Image (cartoon, rainbow, N blue to C red; front, side, top):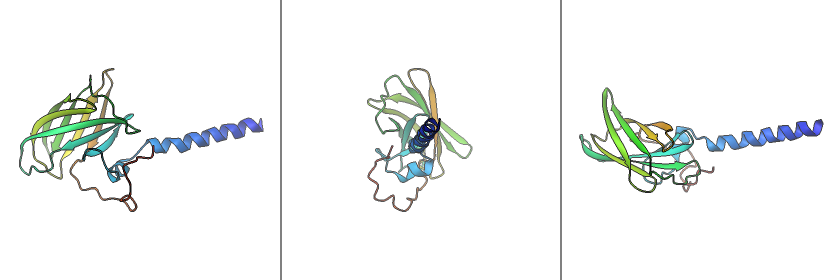
Length: 157
């Protein structure tokens, strides 16, 4: 009986060690370089990277892009997906439809200004009908924690 208890505790320990590596909080994701210069957030079993215009102080037609990857940073095909980005500026709201644009990228265009206070919600519906969403603050300055400067883009999953 003692062997089974030790074995069970060992399995529980291994399982608990593997779980945190799969889940990143926003601060951890903000400290890592993003592949396309946007902000990365977890959305269910996926990472969404939102890229918005950074150089538009006044509202004008600007592009948005969302890149899809899994937790191992492997590209997820955008074919068959659809989505939307809702940009929020105080009480003002702009909704932008997203369509696949090859590989793991969805794109859209809408009228917005590049303001630090911008917030965004990205919702992606996958071919199986499942929808995942994530919240962003894409233009807020993100300080790097100590020791993050030498990180070369590996998430350590």
